[in-house]
Length: 121
Image 1 (cartoon, one colour):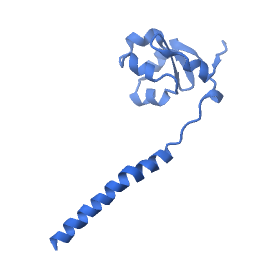
Image 2 (tube, helix red, strand yellow):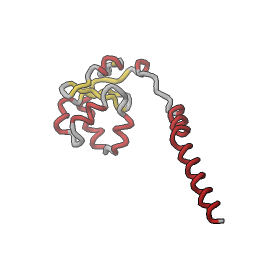
Image 3 (tube, rainbow, N blue to C red):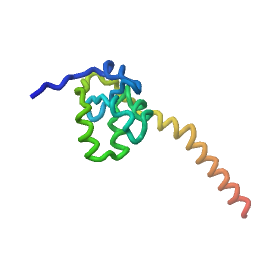
Image 4 (cartoon, helix red, strand yellow):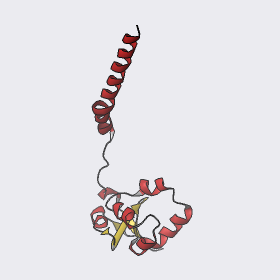
């Protein structure tokens, strides 16, 4: 059995152009450079998926099992999980968004509703 090469995130992230494109999907690293012109979604979507873990984006599109099978021929190695950047916590962002945007809209809605209610009486 052939040993699979472990690659650091910094090394993989260097391959971020249309003529040199590597993706991280489900812990594996794929060199999809030769597939760029054939990709139904276009070159830009692949290049935009470099430099980060593209697993969620890949899964969200709803790729079929045949696509996963096709990926095998582009396998370069596995990502060294210890080299991945820390994931950001979106909780703070969502709370901030609520207070900056949604809460004022709710207050405005209540004020308009109260005004109409008072005018009816």
